Length: 178
Image (cartoon, rainbow, N blue to C red; front, side, top):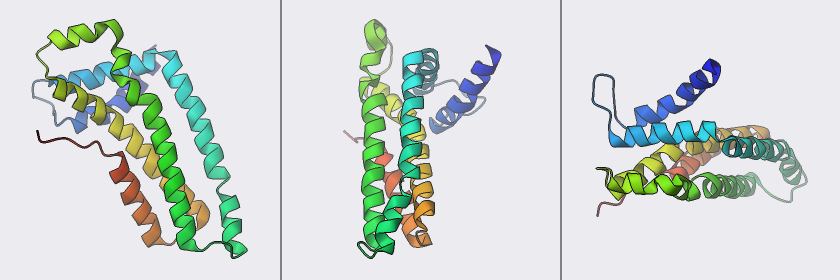
């Protein structure tokens, strides 16, 4: 109902801001595609229910990270080793989310893909809109995950900032110049 549409607008609003569109300007094709993807995501119960399951797994991941802290206490591994393990495992979580939600984004268009092919939108802009639309949720989750696990590990500030920058750059979609 009304509450769901407010929640959807709150989540999709950063995507609109990321496209460079501002109030008073004509809507771009990328903005419209990202809005459509956001609406389709929140209408499809299979998508967001899987996101809830993956969110539960992420919570279990963060809570079990204190077991890695015991490895440091016993002297089996140092703080840099814990940092690298955290970075690697965060990368695996980010990759799992991307493979589940970003990789099939084009094929989820289904039979309506031909409509997009006839629209005045280049394939490059279409794919860029798909990537940018996935970037904001992925980078938000990956930075939150890195911050939480570094907090659980009591990592020093430089290592925490390093993992935030690394996870942010790992989620960034490259845009080709060709």
